[in-house]
Amino acid sequence: MKKEVLSFVKCGLRLVILLLASVLVATCAMLVVFMMPTDRIKSHLLESEAYFMTEADRETNGYTYLDDKQDVMASGIMLHEAIYEDDSESLLTKAMLVSKYYVTDPGKIFFLNVSDLYRQIKGDEEVPAYKQTYARYWHGYLLPIKFLMEFLNLEELLKLNGFLILSLLAIYTYLICETKEKRIPLIVASLGFLILMNPFTIAKSLQLADIFYITILSMILILWMYLKKMDEKLLLYVFFFNGIAVAFFDFLTYPLVAWGVPMLLVTFLYQKDLKTGLFEAVKYGLAWIFAYGGMWGAKIVLATLFTDENIFEDAANQVSLHTTASGEGFGKPINLGNALYNNINNATSIPMLVMYALLVIFIIAYIWKNKKFAYNKNSFVCLTLITLSPFAWYVVMVHHSFLHAYMTYRELGICVFGILLLLGNRGEKQGAGKVNEDLVSGNK
Image (cartoon, rainbow, N blue to C red; front, side, top):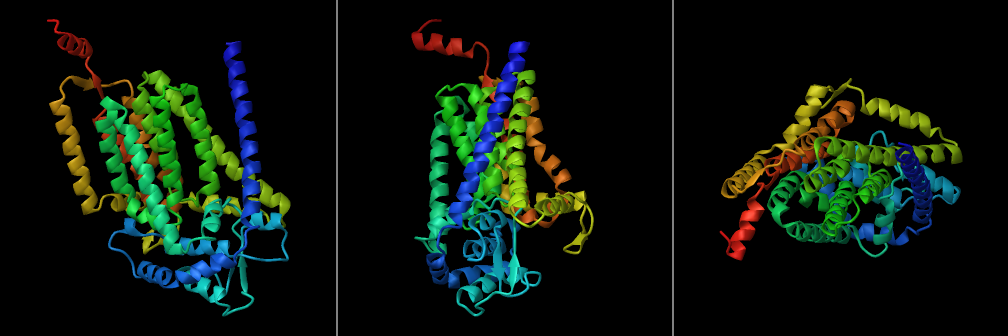
């Protein structure tokens, strides 16, 4: 017992040290972000003016399916931050506050911030009148955006984004195929997940890509570790650094996917008994929450300590807003029922339902054809609980999930991936392996 307690304490201390080191690295990274010049970024943005303005107009006019929404307005916010300059501020203040300038009142330009961006770049207003800070997030996405836009315009950056996503999916598919008997259920579940996620839209969005990258990279690492038969204790650090990355890069889009889908993959691959499976799911979940919450909390502490703004108050107000079922939006009351309806509706368009149905038919046909496989009961409960986790997220983040259902519906990717894994969660029947060996050797 003492040995187990000591091991737990050592692990806890190790995670605390890793968290503090991550905060230090993240702070240095944000300092580098605001050391980068902005002239070439502005020049490359001007090259993409026609494209960006066209996309902004398209988004303002609406979509047939909201899963196609790239959130151009959020991209506008991110690029406003990318071109921010103020010689009167210290580098640390810039890194902590992550400010942006607007030419017109930011309270009136939410759907105009792309045109406002170009007014500023072109010098229509030499001294923009409105300054806005966004200190409660790290905004780590600025690191790759500012670096890449030194060399690429916006259209080229988004093309590169699509190429990288395809490349990672190719690596992921190759590793799945290496799992042999598990490959068919994993391929089917992954296709269902991708249908819901809509990677075509993610490839064209600055905001939506971060969580997808963190998720797919985590899954590639998990598959590689599984195939190499590496120590399962290392999986804890996969989820820990996953949480760190989500807190650093994400703009509060669909963060639970970064934990839930890799956790389903681990549960399906390793097939533990109920007690062990539940323990590991909770352990990895707590590691993720500690990393995510600790990293986010550290940003709030640092921004409050090193600037004149009270970021604690701002963060508390936002948490209260996002978790409160009150008010009205889009002509409907903001409540859990409407939040669930909006998200489920975005995840169940007719094209999606047709493709889900085809995948279910395929997996049932596969099971029927391969009768040597029996249902694996070991991980049923764990897979089911993780599959249902998005609904817990919607209960807690009801306001945010209602207003931003065009992106938060992607949390249901956990459900789709989990349901298809549950259908294909089979293992070879006891004795089937011996029969096959006898047939190969010619024994009867």
